[in-house]
Length: 368
Ligand code: SF4
Image 1 (cartoon, helix red, strand yellow):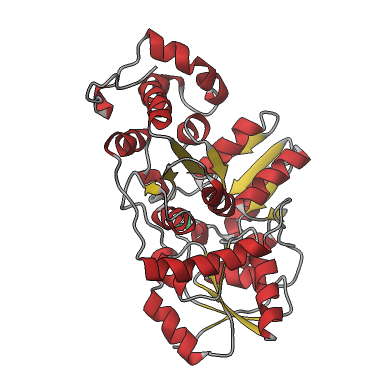
Image 2 (image 1 turned 90 degrees about the vertical axis):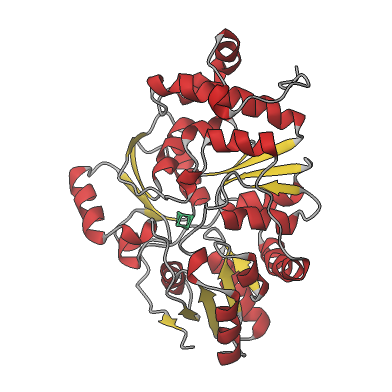
């Protein structure tokens, strides 16, 4: 049944929790009962119901990153996962409209890979400290200073930065991408930007010399070795699972390190009784929904950019078909080549883990 019935669509704050909404959303409520407070459900349910009906009318697909709140991730997300998975699925989506429940660079990536589709982001201010740390002009200066070394750019960057790079990577595939591009260029040195900690963690996994940039994820840079050791003392029976955007000494103190996709796969495969995910807060909630047998201890840092995306903004985005992402075609063509080079290397299967027992190796900063 049509949501609009040719009537103007109500605004988000006019939607109400009635018997019809309750019946249609009961099954979703069951799924998230352990991670969404009971008192909040009547606020979420009318928006979830309206979004799910409106996205069918708009022929839209919602891509939801692992750091979305559980009511978004589990109740309106059609495709969920880490940035590599979202990038790949965005390229294959059949729908005319993509709504990116994530941050701006992810929506740009979806637009670059699907230029014929309408790509919407519910809040244009949903940015990223890594993406903000470097510009296309910075990469051009690096290229001029180091013409013989390939430049690998983390996907957490603007389209302009991707356009100036040789290949992109995610935290799922950073090590194989760096090694593959070094082989292609016949180089013993690779420039990996802009995340200094991801670059340092990759340096410990390869014999290659890695040069990097001083960009950081404001969520993961805050975790410390002392915090991990305290958690270990308080919860000696817990598996400590961390993300490679954290400082290297944090990875060394953990049991496992990998991308958000690898973290989820590790919990699903090993079924630990107790787990501690050293990453953004919503990740534990979302992994907990899929792994009810594991108890999660939740020391976490919120990403203020991811948290700008709410159910109300997703609904308003679909209602008003806003905010549309555009990437200039000359930038998009070159950024797409960098993304495609990465996607061509990415096989299926489980994302590789970082070996946390390997000794630390330095990654120097580029000098420009
Ligand atoms: S969690 Fe870190 S890398 Fe991801 S969007 Fe937030 S600031 Fe950027």
